[in-house]
Length: 308
View (tube, rainbow, N blue to C red):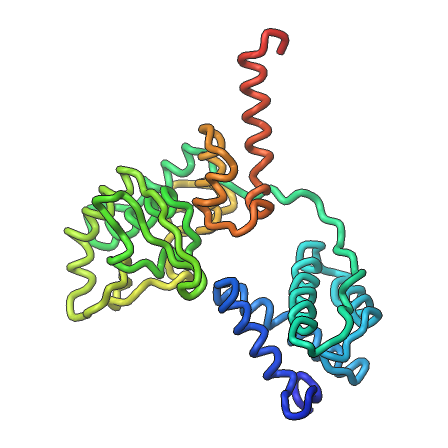
């Protein structure tokens, strides 16, 4: 039995339709590989369930099927997981209607699950400083790690963006890094700050030539094999330095991105500026940090208002 069931519109199969859909995601929105994989995975799961339970293909789905799948598949999952999968279905069925593959949207009246406000995990400024001080910069690897941590905190990059940087993406003179997100479809320039730039210069001068011996590559941050570091390898480094710095808070590379945004807002940055720096397409994504801005407004009010 085919993974996605039968076919529609003659010789056009469901897998081909899903392939066209994820290609459209990449072309139109420049979404990352991880995001596109999530869309594909959600569609595969729903398609398998639909075929096994109702002998229907994706393009034959009805609203009752979506309701039933959501109830069964998400009885023991979080509201955020349920809503992410519903968002995948909504986007797919909207696209199929635009392509003339379906007449009605089976997600049209399906309501998302209620979920509380998600407050991202972050670090205090002192915890960040302790983490940044953990690498031993007298070694080639330690200097590389120090530069990576400094760049991550100074720029708020996604980890995938950090490990994908090229030497050509960094402009020391302009003090910015060119960030490409979603296979080149989206690009932004992010300021780095003097400290991060200083550490990049030291790394390029004293460490990268050692790590790149015998290899020709434009990748900025190199592994012991002279190739670009993977996300998983960098996560291991972050965990190692967190243990060394005795940081007890939950920590991942993404937490440094949250710390970047939180600390900017704490020091007076506008939410829309943070949105641009983070590369969020929609301000609603950045609004998970509004609790920080609200707390700062309360502090300012208490400090300066005569009747506070």
